[in-house]
Image (cartoon, rainbow, N blue to C red):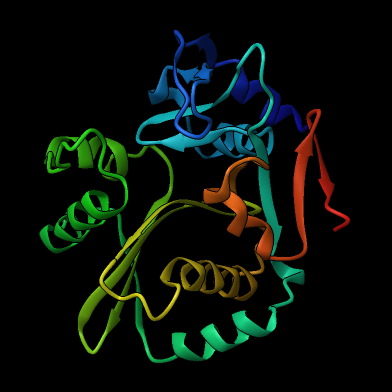
Length: 241
């Protein structure tokens, strides 16, 4: 760690959240460690925190800090060495049909409507509809770092939106939402393929995909992109299988 990086973390303090219900393992409580104040998080200390397994959600940067569980493992794809599988190569051909734009991270009503439809079809909780503009802005649009929005369209129809953070050594894929009515293709996988190609174009080494949990089927897709590294006991290690 450089002297600049060390000094940047002096501006940051950390606190442990109260326990909350884990969103990935049923019946499990979770806690996080959060970097604060968020206004002091800049490009230097954000890159430093991400390299240590942290993650951004809105204006907050956090990582799991559960006393009795270490299931959440940071994962990043080695973008410059990415080898597409046969199925991923087929998706890449379909990706060429899409119009893709890298845009500023700002509120757009069309994007918001797609997000609402995605949430209510894929992640609806307790029968309650997700339609709060304030929640959407807090979760995805507010950011203190270099964040962008990637827009995917087919024949001018909005198909998918991906929120990303651009870092010194790579890109962090923050969140993706897409048209759930299109069941023929894996749009989420297509987004990752595009981001990996973007990393190669910009000579960025890593695509950070947040956390991987072995027991979670929802996260299984993350290990389909090879080669990748997992952070084990604080050290990034390339997976051998």
